[in-house]
Image (tube, rainbow, N blue to C red; front, side, top):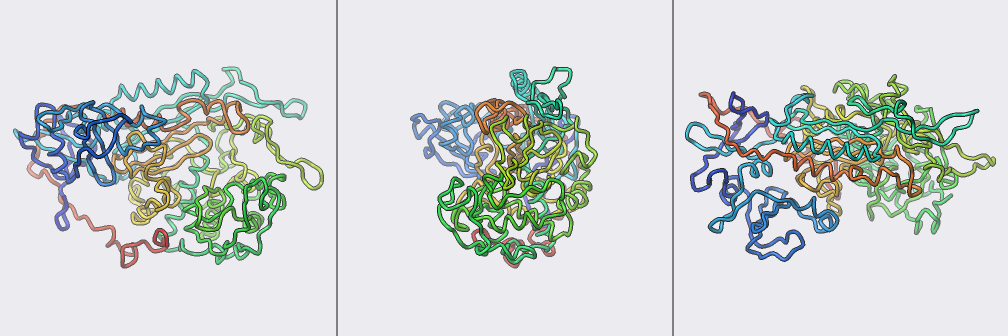
Length: 639
């Protein structure tokens, strides 16, 4: 609780209680609110400022008496209890429930008595991060508060971090079973309170491989077990579209914080982008009105597209113009495999690319949006994107295995997870058409291993792009997630301002699952436990990252599920049929693994039990924003 410029903070740390979390003001629990190992939900709500309602929200698709329903509104999160059946859901979503009832609804240790609902201390801790301690003869309730941690401790104790070790072990068994049945490879990291709570790796970084015989590439085959390469904690994965967040968005958050970029600026006003106008547009290949690409009309307004429109994926650009595919791209065709310094041709093709929609009328998740944003970052900083991030971010964060074009950076191929089996041919089902000279356009046919899988990133952007191309390990990404959880500060250095992060995480008015680049709010994969405040991203190769600032839980799931045979051409891979490929099963199980330890900690409090420290408001930080508290360089949402 903040009083003026002081706050009361509790840290539980003695022989009887080892807890790395940080708690706010202690509240005395009256005897009427505690019965044995249970606490009264109405008292908790009143004490911590929550809103309780009854009989308003259906639960579980079954007719329930309104008298049995109890809803608890905590900030943006809505928890609903069926007090008769002792069921619980957080942020109920009817559409998600229809397909995943076992994830959306869970049992809870509750009890109705005298018209009041009582939860076990274990349930109170698991659901709401409230710890009950006894100081002398007094019972106190403390709610965890969000704080930043200077750095990520690589080995924490899962139990002290609030997890049930047995349940985490069960998740490992669940993963291992899928690997035994054919899933490729995976690396998982869960962190909490600035420490690694759990890591697990399984499967193969390389399981299949092509072979060159007489100068020809033979189709990929399953390698003998002795030649397969297992996943380790050091294995780098192609994180695909997670690149957008931990390369382009990270760079933009830094540049906005430094006052070096204004996201309301129109693309066509930037140096080198003067041709980003309607008159430059070329309708060609599949990108003709009424053509196979899906363009329905000659949309105009390209010169009105702002950088912030691209972050919102509302610029109207084609999601995937397939520039390396001569048949699809037509006159927009471009392959540039190795010249990272040559960006002029890529900018030219983007400037001439037609619009799929009128700007700001539709949301279309587009790789081109982040190709542009990555190129803009390069122009502002005067360096290739990979060099800027390596010099200015990754190295200073201590990330040893994160970067673009890893083989060129000296990384061993044996420490990199392979992706597609037969190049980008989808096991022979895809080609890139014929060039004007009658020759087939180049397409990789060998197993993709150590190079980015994404076609535009590899062929058109020389492996370095704002939309794809970044490789990383689970541990390195854990540091980046801690940086986000810390709102821009790590190891004593500020990389971006907290108000900038908060702004890019504001859910869009038209689709609350999007912020500026980040996936937010009730994104499909963030069900089954995470708070509404959770944010992160996914990647096509089989990756997801998530930060939950309310529960202080960060999850990294890296897989190479595209390193498996194509069973439903062109994009149905065998490993995609496993539960692990859906991500949400793993995330929901991590939350289910939170401990329900209902022991009351016996705490000895020293004379000065509360730490009083100065807590300046973020909006009062020098240069943090405009007079209304809005960060400079980021226009208001919807502006």
